[in-house]
Length: 471
Image (tube, rainbow, N blue to C red; front, top):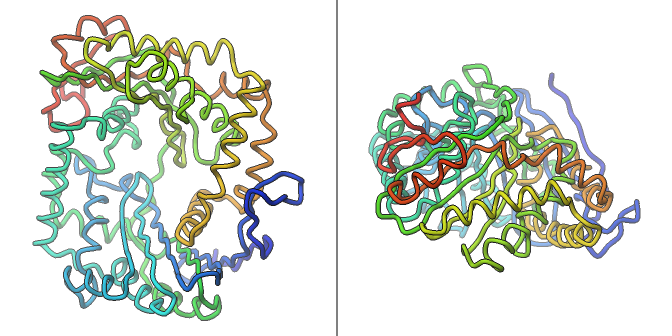
């Protein structure tokens, strides 16, 4: 159904030192207009005249969840290719058009979307819209550029495996935890799946998974909303619809018990580890309480995890815990690394810290400290035009209203010791229910890590993130 919808949320953007109507310090989104084009594209426009700049954010629903089976990385290659020539411009001409006015355009793929972002001077708004619409509606998808992009993607994975597996530990973790579920598929692909992707696969992905009916577009900055609306309708309103139904991920099941994946990297002097289970979605009603608790547990320098594994014991240079959020609950994970000979000591300490979180909960002082930290950190995340545009597409993508921002401070301040305890029990995995991934020297740590559960082994050289023997 096509409809026009506007959110009247107040004309002023209040910074954290201001006071919202409910008495809580916080921020509010500026007023913005939302409407739907004839082809189903959803647009949000926010005038902001403090600087002569305009930022655009575009999300196309679908992402790598629409990759053909066995050809993961197709969406990611497509996102790279649309920056390598579009419309009448080849790759060099496209880049020159952006650089000639001091603008920027970037694109990328995630599990559930393909995204484009742009930032230009207000005077160059027409060029910005032309370039973004060319990239989405008229990408060249040139064979020579495809070959370069695919080769670089494969080389990048191989280089990370060789020099810094930290960049890939979450890929192994998701593959191990979510095997058989769309969230277990590598968004950027693997060496083997990328090698199998052809230009025809990318073109087919574009025809089937990218179209105007899936577009969410937000523009923030120094413009007239009425004029910008006319420009966007002319540029995007006639874009054809995607040729296939939108893929949907089912709710994943939480892991019961433990399973261990040991990725053998002979000669490694460090062990990289990832401990995880199914966490929470972007729209989880408990998401703010989860953030308050996680900030104490593993979300800041002075968190429980970093204090135990780095500050007190010196076992690592850093330890963290993260809620990755999507339309369905994605992974909650603990990540760190340590010297090979300290592997068991570090993992034991991480597990003991998770046990302590469940057993002791948080006291009032820790809750208050976390609240103050989050309230201070939130305003800068929606400060620039680009941040605001990204926030608008995020809200629309997940079906959230401006209250997700406007009421944030109130939700943070409503957390207390009892609600934190409830959230820990409901949202944070128990230490005995974890998917565990280790990247390290199997000859030195293989026997010791059997204590954590059944161990499956693979080699770092394997061109996948999941062991072939157990597919």
